[in-house]
Length: 319
Length: 319
Image: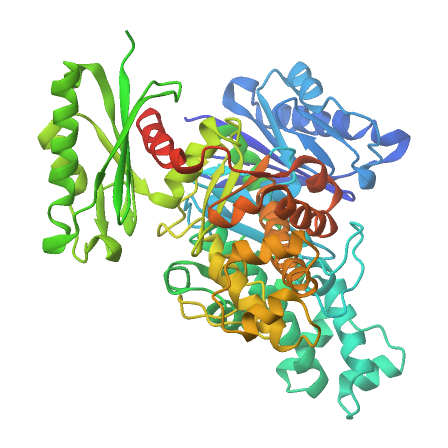
């Protein structure tokens, strides 16, 4: 029997774990709650305990495994195996994660940030078809990303490679971004960004679109509402959709001019809008890409959803 | 004596050749004219003859060399060692360049496109300080580029990686680009682009700036004229300079958000404007980059000028 890998996707509310084959097949997955009390000092011991317990239940030992891979929020030093500034875990000081895992379990341990790891998951056994040139963009509360080019994860000189949410795309009346600058992709293409756009264009809109009424009524409008209304032909929702598509499509085209990836994979909650979202983005992408790129770079939806994290984490062990 | 490398930079008017050490030191360089007659069929034989002659003069044999590297215009298939569509060489059909060199000289032969090769030269022994994460942008008649990320040249899925001149940056009143789309960086940041901008802003300008007079007089204005006048404080030239800086600075910031390179190296004729050009671009870059990027990615001038080609070509042999 060939050896297995453990993949861990560490999040602020839960930790997802999986046992996988070296081909990226998930044989078993489970999750535990993330206990962020006491400066997050229980997190790593809890995960280690959960793995040990699983070993016992199944009669497994460390010899059945090649290693452990993990995706983490915060600033991850993948060489040193440390994490700092993961505020949703209460990890404010430097955490020696690799050291803790390796001494407790005796298995090689690899770690990278959660966006990079999700990118690796989609690239390996998701929409990326294991192509060596794949860009992953996650459209959630914020916009994150990961870049795989010439077969390598691109971390850049200080680990800030793949920060696709902070590409500047809005120049006319840019919203302020949490990063301190203005006009970031995240301010117009995340779930929050779509709400930003809805408010902006509602202010300029005089008709009787349903989205306009909802906003004027002070209802909580979500990205899903906007896409659903746009699909139904709501006038204002379509204006928002067109601007969203313009910003995201140009960002994708500009990423493609730099990297010419085989796929730009869109994931995260906002991407649930599916083919409708793709249609708008692809149109703008084509208008803003020169022929060679247009013919060779495809914009596609993520296929592995929440599993991308454990899959990509596991792939770290194989690099 | 350790073995040497031959670097070749093939251009439309001349071919630059050099003998280099494995440390990137140029021991000897020379050039020959590019004879593009008869569908460019003399080009490769001419280069081979020139190398053979050099071998004879110096009493060298193929055993003194590790291999030959070459940068070429056109669409280069670096795996197959072929070139097609290099119109300034009259190479319209597929050229089996690698095959010709290897059978004539008996040395391993490597080839990539000229922009990639210049990028490798600057990355290896130029402004890139041999850092594994370097982006090179050449601001000449057009805007070209090359990307080295995680130590690898990024060619992308169809060789169109690093096409930095076709990043879309101008949305308001975009100029048409030779690539078929509009608003490309090349239309506003190349030598031609700066002339484009001068004409655009001259049309909107009512004052008595010298640049305005030159344009109204129908004089041929060059990028150098514009930068020289801007340095002297010419009103219109400064408007052009600010817009040029805005476009190029945003493009650099967006490249950096994707790749977080240690250096973005600016080369080509336009970069002769030197520190003055850097000042404008760096200011906009800082405004459009989030903290981690701003602190770790530097915009610098190329240092190897015309030698970048033969240096980068030689580096192909060492990969």
